[in-house]
Image (cartoon, rainbow over all chains, first blue to last red; front, side, top):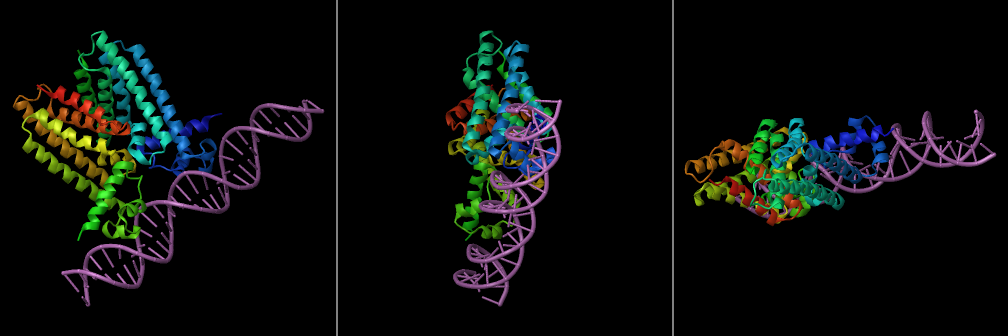
Length: 187
Length: 187
DNA sequence: AAAGATCTACCTACTTAATGGTAGGCAATG
DNA sequence: CATTGCCTACCATTAAGTAGGTAGATCTTT
């Protein structure tokens, strides 16, 4: 049934995360999926449509993962550590963050996509803020700093580590950075 | 004399940092500089040549700034704060890090450029490691963590903050993250 | 249940514009 | 007079997107 569409999304995500949004073409995607270029337009009329769908699907997957972490891990630092593990997967596969790949495009990025990725980051920020606030309340996270500030700090560190350690193909170095981050958050 | 060449480098840097390497064309650059597209090839035969020159020039500018920081600022945390200020400029101008823009391209990036940006990051890593080690020795930086690990951590945080806060056009948020980072490094 | 109509998912073939890059000329400079 | 720096004009390729068609599934009507 909707197999091709899912395959298109999967391969497109790999392409964007691997080479950037401007760095892949419908021809590349067609070849990856084993379909004709024109057929892609049947599922995603324009490249921006595809990009927007990609971001939504990516955000949804993250949302599920974030909910699972909150359900499975009780303490603040543990949750942040689990959150960081999500990024580690990218380093291991040699794939960057989808939204980082889009964010780099900056001014050239269609307005619609810019809004979508801002929403993505805001969602993470809100989740992290809630997690950190709860951690401060239960004494597992060090207090004295505003959760909102800390949340931005956490994302920045992980996004940056993913960007750099993917280049160096060094999951171990990513793990070190994550460890320093989590250690610094403990009460 | 070499005015056009310098102008090409300057405008190209702005374009790459603003929209990514694959996100700008020789036509864009020609228009920005006020020259014909073909004339660019006289200075930079291929786009990869241009990119490589860009990275070297960018790294050289940073090298000078890093040397100045080491000369002007005595303590470890102060030096890291000054280092972070360099990134802040990007947020204020709405420009990302040149090497981050290239790093995002990942596998699609010509091998030569990938090596060049790896060298860029390695240079920063070495500088930071030396600064942090000296800071630990003179007691201004908290000890207990390896300078090499801390150095990667610092770059990751700043690169990530630049990436995200540029999207949000929020220099203030970047400053907050930098403050948290520096505070955490103090002895 | 058979017949027709419609829809889905894909195809070939194409258009238009942009890409990076080349060839060759010409005027100024040293 | 040779080099530098730019030009016009071009090339092959690739980009995203369109036009129009076809086989098969599905829905509708009798």
